[in-house]
Image 1 (cartoon, rainbow, N blue to C red):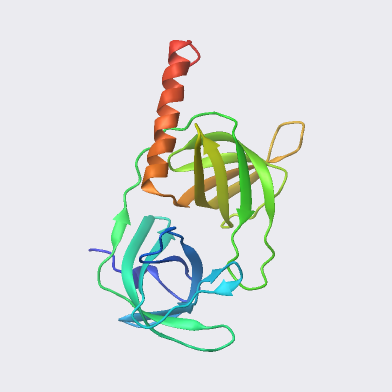
Image 2 (image 1 turned 45 degrees about the horizontal axis):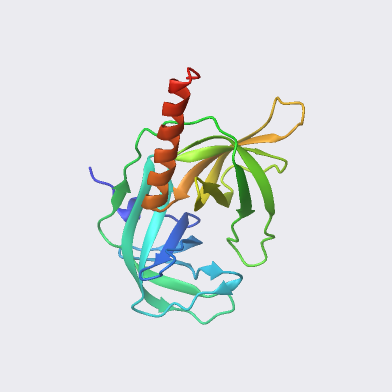
Length: 219
């Protein structure tokens, strides 16, 4: 039995919305408020504390993260309310696509990462800090952080890997206190939004470093 978008959504489901044609390919995090057989209603995306201009006919892509995988489907805005906190009604199609996850190999490495929490709702306090990776793969990373974050927190991570700036959105899947004497926290982060070319760059970096370690007899 195939999964349809209506099977993944319910009031309160977190989704990521990208406007088709956005040159920066930004995903904006929203919340589903209601849905029917052929439509769903969510809040209008916020960007830098301003609501995006969404008009009837605007084409969007919607990404949904579930325990069974990451899915996306194409949709279209039907109408937008003009309330103080605007909502938009969008098409709920019959088909979706599952994003295949490869078995990514992790590399133990320490890289500085600029981290900031994502503003999901107006009034949310944004937290920014610098952390260090303890491992990384094409599917996520582990962070050593002075800041404790709750599981399910969405964060943006920016780092430089071999001269390339990589910016991804991730979801904290676990947070435990480190056993190191500095008393930091170990965060497990799963990528939920990463450009394919950036993901390939990370995988290439991991493979290259592992080959170097093998040549040196370290792996």
